[in-house]
Length: 290
Length: 239
Image (cartoon, rainbow over all chains, first blue to last red; front, side, top):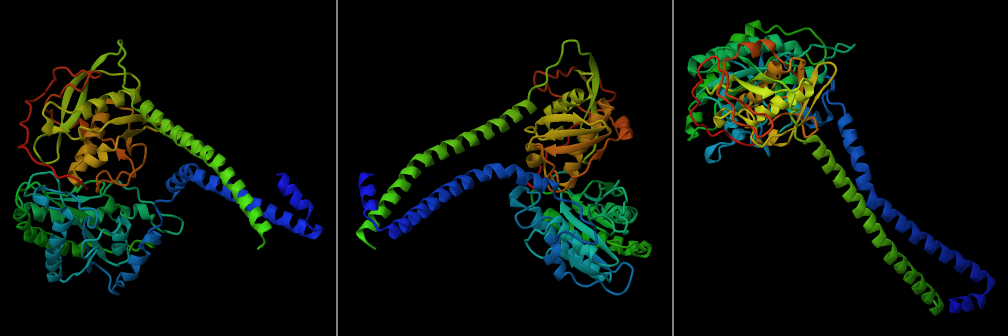
């Protein structure tokens, strides 16, 4: 310290001022750096609850006419709706995929793989009935629930069929599910909330589901004769007649037992949708409704 | 740069190092104390939520109706009558019957809920909405599938309807959070309607197992013979 004082006293006045400024600036930088370090080290713990709160507060049900932003990439690939009205398009939804294998059974069976194979046969059967078929996924990927619904919601005169394999249930039976008890609401502009897009279609879904379930019951003994109701998440945001078809189950010892069911399931779905076609009157509502 | 400047620079750097050497251990201790405090808070909240229910000696024993799998393998449920000491407080009563439901029946093949699942808390809102907060095991260990997930929720709603009439709707949370689906299919973003009629027409099922010390199931009062359990199946796992 004494040495420093001696040096400063010997300096020229101008140089002394300049050097003092430089030293002050250096200290300022060091202190500012220490404060910044301290703040950055504490900030994760302090901001985590705020982040969680903001996620919880995020809107979950955008209007059907404006799907969530995550669907933007998908909607670019959605084929344009055909000009003619009435049932012409079937959107097939092989459930799960990607990192979500769905139900897993003996021998490494994965629901996501089986339903993809099923969907190929269902697609052929539907095309034989004259339908245009779109699939929510072609390979081992996992679109979000909203992305899958968006594919159907972008069409005019489409129906939606989601394919599943159960974890439980009587092997060799097939069940059709529809969503129910959604209150039909629309905003001032007549748009259906995205989260309740299925509401106006529950009656049509019931009719299509009963037709397909009846045909499945003829082919697979032990299956119900009418469609069941369940709050299947995938169906809720779909603005079209929509059903989920679940085949029982992955508990079979050999996957061949499931593969043998595929032609019957495909035929029942295609025939049921074809029988449903005359009764599908496209609603004249705006927004997500076709 | 002159030697004098170098000396100044070295001096300043030494001071900076000295400040850092003093400050950073303090900062580290502060961070560790903050992290520990947060961990304790979370643990304290969990303990408060999972405190076991104490049955008061004066609480009357009533015949509760619990819904487990019917054993037909078709997703249907059957009821079993169990004598339990139930509280008159609806929220506490709901937790008591759901704890018994989670404990499962004697025949474990008739379970509808994962054995590791725990009801953390049950709240009853003034509008009749019951909020059941389950542990993560309910979501991770319920077999993935529409039928299996629907059966799990049906067993809860029908049991509540039969034993806690004030519950009109049910909201299911997983570890305090709203989740999109139960195990990949069933929608948990809304509430489930509790169905009175369905609870009244269900046939009885097998007697329950003794679910720990708190709820004490007695010999079941069955209206019909206990249905034969379904052949053992290996439910799939995962989502």
